[in-house]
Image (cartoon, rainbow, N blue to C red):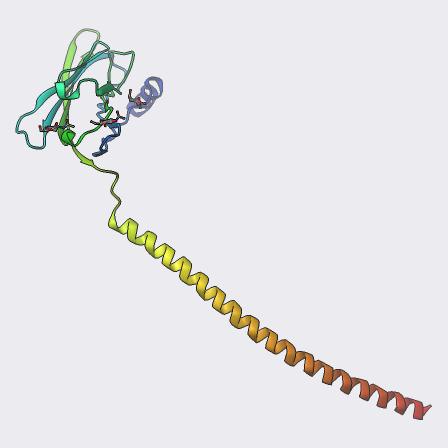
Length: 212
Ligand SMILES: *[C@@H]1O[C@H](CO)[C@@H](O)[C@H](O)[C@H]1NC(C)=O
Ligand SMILES: *[C@@H]1O[C@H](CO)[C@@H](O)[C@H](O)[C@H]1NC(C)=O
Ligand SMILES: *[C@@H]1O[C@H](CO)[C@@H](O)[C@H](O)[C@H]1NC(C)=O
């Protein structure tokens, strides 16, 4: 019955799944910093505030980066002015998705991001406060790097395709020659055979004629 009830509530409220954020951002492109914190009790109304903190790769402390509360977001770190957008739950104070979007990633955005959810669950006769923290380590790369294995397997694919086609052509030429040689041979043979049959049937005819 607990299972049924949780299934029912997730169907009603839209299933919440905590997906981990990507960790490789491409310079000069947009990047979504994902942070999802599902309510343990989907059916209980709640209110949440989300705060983001940033620690650059050469820094030792986190600085306050962004805050979202009461349907309002505010960029606090000047390094991210005009570059950040809210990508989380919209039109609600009951936040479960606290993702933000960096519009134009720079190499200085490399570092650790901390995302915190401060949630108040509102039961009918009391309130319960919870807090969730997640860390995301972001690496900024010139463009999406591909694994060596992937590059190697692509090269192998082309090598084997070209190799197989070359082999196919060689085999076709060889077969063609063999067939045409065999064809001439067969032609000669069948001509001889025809002549042999013809002469034999002439003999037969002659024999029959003799018999008559
Ligand atoms: C991103 O920023 C760089 C310099 O910081 C700028 O040259 C580039 O045009 C920007 N790209 C976009 C899409 O805003
Ligand atoms: C996140 O925000 C950016 C910038 O406002 C927008 O381009 C993008 O579509 C948003 N993505 C989602 C999943 O909301
Ligand atoms: C990155 O940081 C360095 C040193 O703090 C600064 O000189 C540079 O202008 C920054 N680059 C960008 C694109 O913000």
